[in-house]
Amino acid sequence: MALTYAHLESDDVKSRFVTIAQKNNAGDYVVAGSDSPLITADVNHVRLHEGRAYYVYKTHKDTARLAVGAHIDIAIAFPAGVEAHAFVDYQAGGEAEIYVYESPTTSGGTSMTLYRRNRVINTASQGVAVLNPTVSAVGTEFYSELITSAEGQGNRSGAGGRGLSFEFILKPLTTYLFRLTNVNGSSQMAELRIDWYE
Image (cartoon, rainbow, N blue to C red; front, side):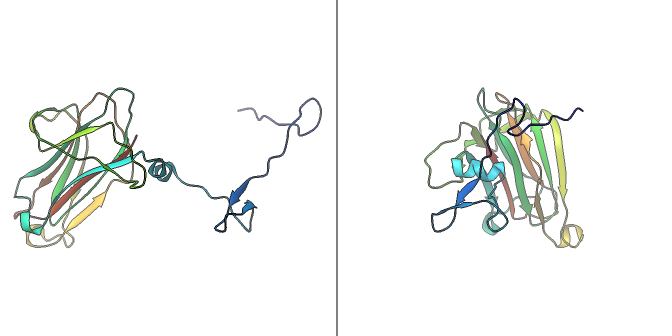
């Protein structure tokens, strides 16, 4: 790879030095430097401030535990032109399995509220989600993970939970099925949450 050099104020290239400044807590502009490092934010945080970050979830609390072998299924889709950057968080009171499927065949289910993470800006997600649709075909599995009990005691004790630390970019006009299955020998508290930005 060839290096490109810029000639600063020399030869036939004219360029200007730009000083980066930012507001401090007092509202004054200060030059970014070692005493006042440049403030940066990752794209997830920026989308949050823009009002483009959303989530949907289902929780089985202690008073309504997820039965043995039962699922939390959330089917979600986005319209043409929207490539949602999504990740999933989950936890369960015992062993469980997580699956993500592309292009399942689903029908029915309960429409879910898609929540805006920025509670100041009034925006709405372009996606739709349904809880526990009838699934006649799961589609293509492209991710699975296990939740193991904390002590490795099988169905006798323990709890587990974690979330994906990487994102999926979901195709528009495609349904995705996020599934948490209780594989513990007893009913368990469980939660499944999908976060995304558009």
